[in-house]
Length: 114
Image (tube, rainbow, N blue to C red; front, side, top):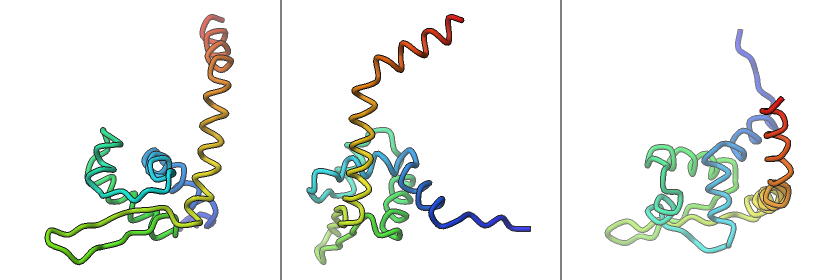
């Protein structure tokens, strides 16, 4: 028996995956990024994982991939309006986490000490 995941849950998994979050955050400024620049920015992501993440986000309509017909191939990635909307929410969450990090750390220390 195959379990069906609702579409919203699958989209949530794509956006909030380890690399999905980082790609959306990197592309948030609105600039276009080449694959190699994104890989350098994200440092520890493998080429394979970055490729898979970009393809998934492109398929979902969050990322636009533009191929320039030159030699060697020149590919750039940007956020679509849909991707910008998702990234807006992620950046707001990042800001909230940064603002509340000391309180969370204190709660963790209290918990670990008990």
